[in-house]
Image (cartoon, rainbow, N blue to C red; front, side):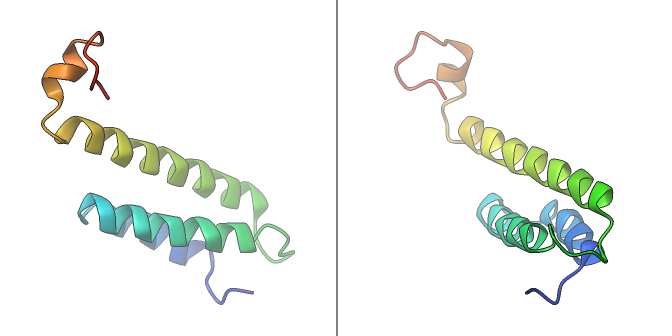
Length: 86
């Protein structure tokens, strides 16, 4: 069982905004594992946990989408018929 709690995960979400993509995704993946471990904890507000889980998933998607467009492939992204469009 993790010693981390919901405020720790919230802090990770905030910190991830200041990190490079790879480090941010790594931090958020750890936070995802922590949230998963808190699923059956009776002392945890499960509505708040689910809200954080949704925010976390959204943030990971944002980072991965940003990464897809930052790789010099913006031209391909603008032309979906290109073979290497993200």
